Every structure is written in structure tokens, then in C-alpha cells.
Image 1 (spheres, rainbow, N blue to C red):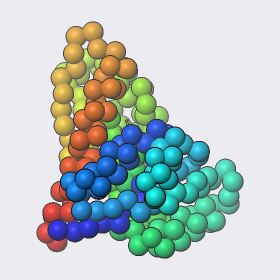
Image 2: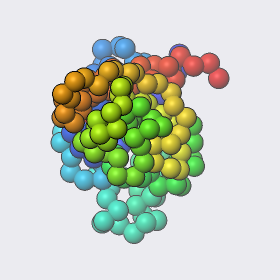
Image 3: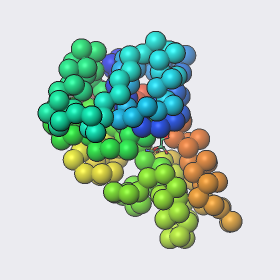
Image 4: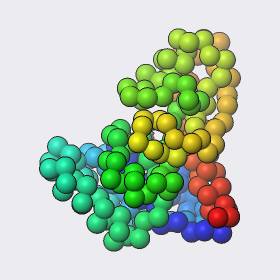
Length: 195
Ligand code: GRF
């Protein structure tokens, strides 16, 4: 059983992060979230802070590129991070970080990749596209992160049927409930993986 020191990257509400933190506290996961990085002041930072987790807002808008990256790298090193989770992080992770942490970065996406991914495919856009396409199924995907948006190897997906009269909002809500389950399941798969 591996115990990862996790850094989570967020930009928004951080409901996936919250669920993962809860699952590290209730023993479902052996790993711990040590660091939360956001590109802006995000509601998700509040829960992390109140759980005693180090948080940092690091925005490309405030810093030259090299400092933007070195600031992240020094925190990732300081907290001994060996697994990065993108949990609603709206920006692309810098390639320097992707290269160093290759195979140890996960993302969660609210549709069944490889469909409905890529630049601009976030928030309700994703669910609108799913409904417009008349897809029979949707559901979240946890995948490894490589240099391209929503692209790397898929680790876990869960399917639900798109219902009659479904709206982007209703689909988003139902998919998010599953996200809260499968992101922790995916981490557990890595904890139990023999290498
Ligand atoms: C989720 O829908 C996730 O799939 C996407 O961003 C959203 C983040 O939600 N990548 P939250 O901040 O975890 O509530």
C-alpha cells in the first residue's frame, strides 16, 4: 500500500478536493493532501485551510513565467509531493511540471473521454455538448495528465444514462456526484498498484 503526499490544484469550488480530504481523514485513503495550489482566490481554499492544509495562490498574472513555475516547484518539493491531482484547475499545468511528475498527475473530467474533451470543454459547455450530440451515456473520467488537454491514459470512468429532458445543469449535478466517488477510487487504485 502506497501513501502519497498529494498536491491538489483547483480554481473553483473544490468539491472534489473536499471529498478527497474527507476520504483521507476517514481512512478510505492512506494518502494525505499536503498542499493545495490555486490560480485565484477560490472557495475551495477555505475548506483546505480549515483542515490544516497548506494553500497557495499562484497566478501567472502576477509573475513572470520562470517564477510562476519555480514557486510551484519549490512548494511541491518542500511538501514531498509525489502525486498531483488537478481538481477543477482551469489552467494548463506548465510542461516543466508535467515532465517532472509524468505518470503521477491525475485530472478529473466531467464526461466520457476521449469524447467531449479539449480546450474550452469545461463547466456547463461539456454537458451542453453531450446533450446536443444525443449521446446515450455520460459520466466522469479520471485520467493521467500529459501535455495536451484531457488527453492522457484513462484510469477510471463511470457511465450514467443521459435522461429524457436532461438539462446541462441536471447532468452536471449527476455527474459531479459520481466524480466525488471515482476520484478517490482512482487514487486508491494507485495506492494499491504494485510497481
Ligand atoms: C468538475 O466538474 C471537474 O470534472 C472539472 O471541474 C469541476 C470541478 O468541480 N474538471 P469542483 O471544484 O471539484 O467542485
